[in-house]
Length: 98
Image (cartoon, rainbow, N blue to C red):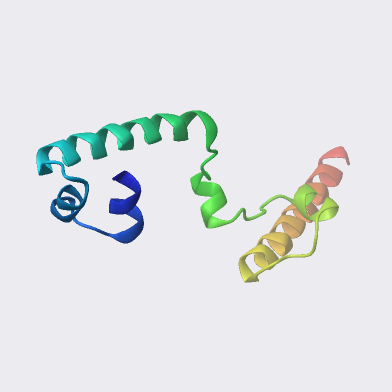
């Protein structure tokens, strides 16, 4: 019954008529299987995190040195910004030593 409702987009009333059950029984069994599926999903299915859904954007210079080239405009900007930040920091360190 659960697969018929989910897979074929059948309403519970039609499923009850097809399987010879009341609509209340179909509703009860549907949500019982749905709860069990939810519990299994928590244990066995790895859902993507928000960061994985959005796509990981690199920000630090070390991430660009060891990885592939920038994939989009934002990563290209971040690469140049990180490199410029590194140059400025290095310049100030040299000046402080003098």
